[in-house]
Amino acid sequence: MQELTGVFVTDGVSRSGECFPIPALEDMLWQSYGKGTPANISHDIHRPLGISRVSSLYVSHEEAYVLGVDNKADFRQSGFEKGASGRLFQR
Image (cartoon, rainbow, N blue to C red; front, side, top):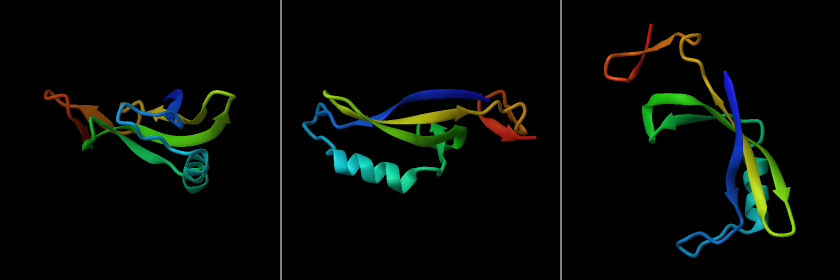
C-alpha cells in the first residue's frame, strides 16, 4: 500500500473568491478525524483508488492547511484486478 501525504484544503482565497475560515477547517478536522473516506478515480464510485484520512491542521503565519493521508491500495493484494477496459473487478 502506498501512502501519500498532501494538503486537502486551505484558508486561502480560491479563484472563485471563496475561502474557508480557520474555525471551519478545525470543524472539518474534528468531524472527520480517524474516519476513512473512499477515494475514487474521477468521482466514479465504481473505480476505487484507496482511502483518504484527515490527519492534522497546520497553522502558519501565512495560511492554515488541513493535511491528510491517501492510502493507495495495491489491488492485486486486495482481491481486485484490472480488466481489459481498465476497470477494476473483484476476483
